[in-house]
Image (cartoon, rainbow, N blue to C red; front, side):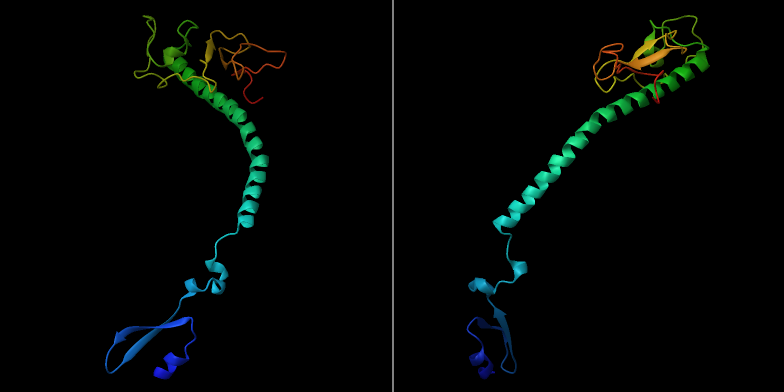
Length: 182
């Protein structure tokens, strides 16, 4: 055993794990922290150049992807407004099935939430037809007009992204039950 210890290279150390007169167990450990040149590639950190390359790649990806994702926010709001209008239309249809008429313009969409003060209104569903009337994705109230002025029984619409009623500069961004699917 002494021959093994004497012939061990300088960077190896002999550490007795257990000393028993009958048996000696020795553990040879390589202390690489004392000799940095012997570090394996997997034990070294990243160089500054490697980190800079990764940061540049992430920056380039962000420069191309972020503008495309940000353009989708407007599309998502328009889609939400269309879905809201369809849901409110369904509630208005249920209202008409129960009461045999649509709410008046003066009663508005609030007639779907709480019973209007109209003694001639029969069979109004207890609890309402929708939980609440939400605002459009731009924070404005949905508009309701009965009878409709655009060839429908009623008009239900949002003023759209600009929040202004009607066609603006011929473009018209109002979203209504008359142009769903366009």
